[in-house]
Image 1 (cartoon, rainbow, N blue to C red):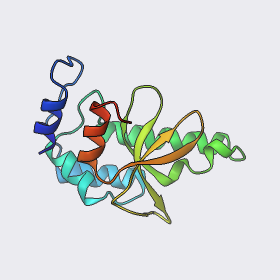
Image 2 (cartoon, rainbow, N blue to C red):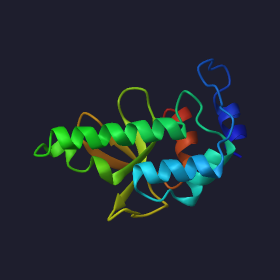
Image 3 (tube, rainbow, N blue to C red):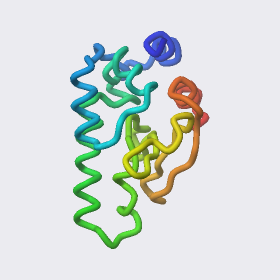
Length: 144
């Protein structure tokens, strides 16, 4: 489903390189690293493709971003921009510093039917889609 959607929407974009899927162990390892259980839809995406080197992050990139978020939070504990960084699972990027993510509280996803764009300049999140497929489609149509 996701491969076909991305292939169709990204025709002519030489930067998009759909990666082979990852297995359950890799996803479990990423969940442990992030510290938040992944929503079913994100797990399904990663089982179909492990990032696309353009919009969607691989499990390794998700873990690296989570670790970076932890480091920023530890280095700037009193700064407003850093206080909520551990409440997100960043799984896609627009390439300009903003990320698409799920929001969590108390180590649980708040709502699996809301995908947010986290704005790095404003340190705020805005709902942009109700599922990953919608987020992908809206991204490639330049709607978000």
